Image (cartoon, rainbow, N blue to C red; front, side, top):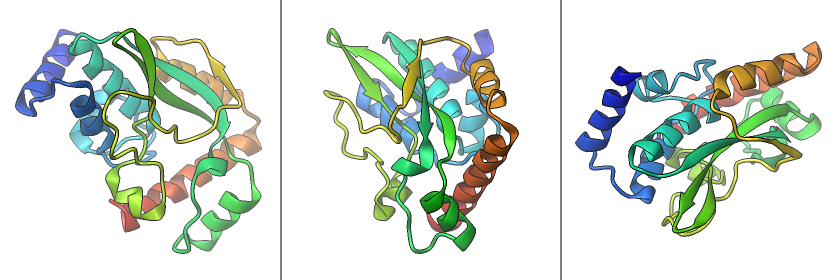
Length: 195
């Protein structure tokens, strides 16, 4: 834990991350990729991460800067809030437009000047031209747009990695397979068109 804390402090110092918007945008601009690795240190060093790893990293940076921050988990049909682009491969286009892809998405809730703000750092700037909700102009005084619409939310918990694994494993096998295929195809498309 001490080494991780030193890792966070070093990054914050080297990148002059002091304000809420600076920290948020630094994490948000890590390219999105569903690699299966939710470890925040690995997300930073590999410069790619999904909502889980990016939001754990964001929460931890914010806490290191003195903010109260927690991660909220929601159940959602993720594809229903994601734009469909003409450059999508046919299989991805079909899933995105004809299926309901279940997911357990995360975002950060941070206390700023007495109010809790919802921060979603899922999408990086390379996705702006495809109409993804990248939040590139967020200034720190209000909620960001969330990458997906919640069907329901779960209480904040510290161990997001285990919670996510448990929730995903609770889905029927065909839904787990659909989810895995969708996020693999989205990650491949992003790596090709918006990295």
